[in-house]
Length: 65
Image 1: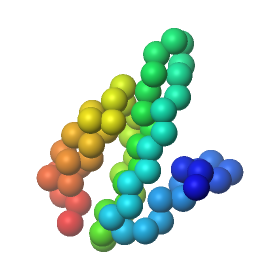
Image 2: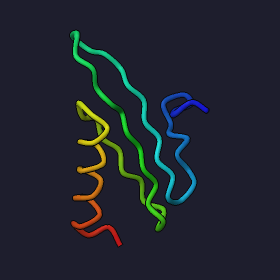
Image 3: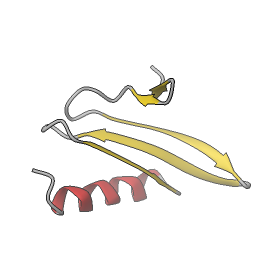
Image 4: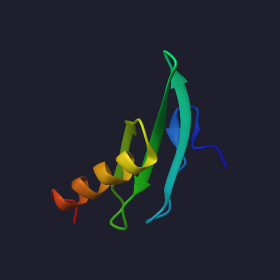
């Protein structure tokens, strides 16, 4: 399944994460979406999947209930 359709995320299921890599200016990045069990969407772009997940974890600690 594509991560987006017409620019809209397909990460709709609570607890679901999706990611894909892309290149820009010869650097590789990861586009990451995560749907929290409460329905909120977290989305980011980082150089690695591990960095995306670390950012998600910080987001969850910062007040996502």
